[in-house]
Every structure is written in C-alpha cells, then in structure tokens.
Image 1 (cartoon, one colour):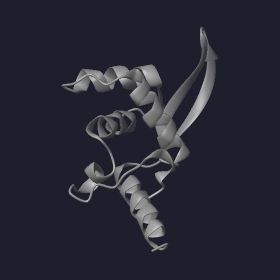
Image 2 (cartoon, one colour):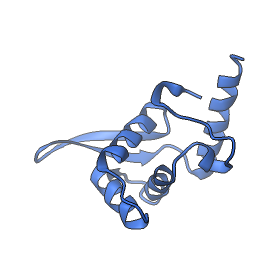
Image 3 (spheres, helix red, strand yellow):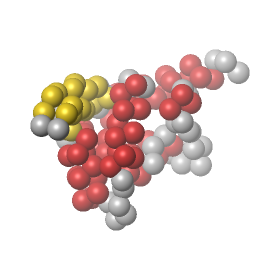
Image 4 (cartoon, helix red, strand yellow):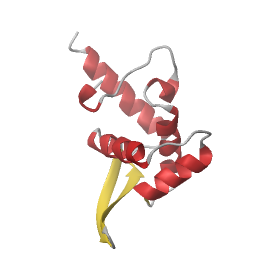
Length: 112
C-alpha cells in the first residue's frame, strides 16, 4: 500500500474494512450515492447524520483529499462565497474500488 497518506491495511478485517475506518467507509458509501459530486461540508454532514459518533470536519476533509491523491476519488474546485470549495465524486463503484485496491496491494507486495 502507498503509506504516503498513512493508509494501513488491517488483515484482521475483511473487504473494505481492511482499508478504511468506519467513518471513511460511510463517506465513500455516501459519495457513491451522489455521482454528480458533493462538497466536503455535505459529506461531513451526511456522514455525521448516519454515524453514532461525531466525526470532525477536518477528518473528512483530510480523508477526501488523501483519497483523491491516491486516485480513489476525483474532484473539482469551485470559487464561492468565502473561498474555494472542493466537490468530490467517485472514480470507481464498489466493485471497481475493490479491484483497484487489490492492484495497489499486489504492486506493494512486489517490493518484498
């Protein structure tokens, strides 16, 4: 895995839970439901509305930015009142993301 963004693989879990914390997985599920994209505030609000514990907006912003850098999400920036806003959308559906993550792990293992 690309640890540049502190992505850690948890072998005690399965599926997407191996790669993502619960709030991160929830944020991805929300983004999958909005192919036109959501801004960070929208993702943060919806994630918190669906979780039992509160997640900071900074955690969501950092996760979305790191996911875009890793090629998991795509984004565009728009100028608005108060500055720039990033809108994120998925590059992969659930099956596509699983395939992408498998390839990332395979590439990382080649260095062993």
